[in-house]
Amino acid sequence: ELKVEQNPLFLSMQEGKNYTIYCNYSTTSDRLYWYRQDPGKSLESLFVLLSNGAVKQEGRLMASLDTKARLSTLHITAAVHDLSATYFCAVDIWDDKIIFGKGTRLHILP
Amino acid sequence: EAGVVQSPRYKIIEKKQPVAFWCNPISGHNTLYWYLQNLGQGPELLIRYENEEAVDDSQLPKDRFSAERLKGVDSTLKIQPAELGDSAVYLCASSPNSYNEQFFGPGTRLTVL
Image (tube, rainbow over all chains, first blue to last red; front, side, top):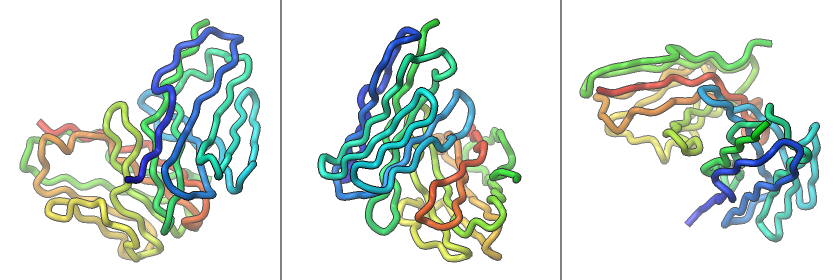
């Protein structure tokens, strides 16, 4: 069964702290996406990871991909309130089918 | 550059009624997707178009759902008849091709009473 699992599903953290969101997937893929969704809004693309070992950074967010472990991480450095949102990973599997995780709802306390 | 446009933004109907959603993708984007998103869940693909061809409609409930993209540009998703369980947000996304990141529209929030 094809699965994309995110962990944790909900995270409440203090401003200034670091944390990591994990995305595990159950089948071979070498392309993974991270999206952000604010409440009542649509999805905004954050990162596209295209190969094993890929690492991308934008501001306080850094994403990485380990295709051998079938794992991607989204690391948050010195969190700020504006990063509060739901974060989705999406895995591109065979035949360009894309499967989304359930999302990690991130709440950053001021 | 204009983003993905969807209309209507909100729709409330009674069960057994028909409903249609419209999507205009970003200009030049060949690939168009329709997703369903339930509250607290990730988007689930309903159908993917490459130009005017539906290349993946395996998750589309064909007994009541239909979609078209006649000229390979804008697209319509229809539900007839709607059921209570169809209440969700329907998202349209587009990309230059299926190897690129997707750009999402604002979605249509459907409530079936």
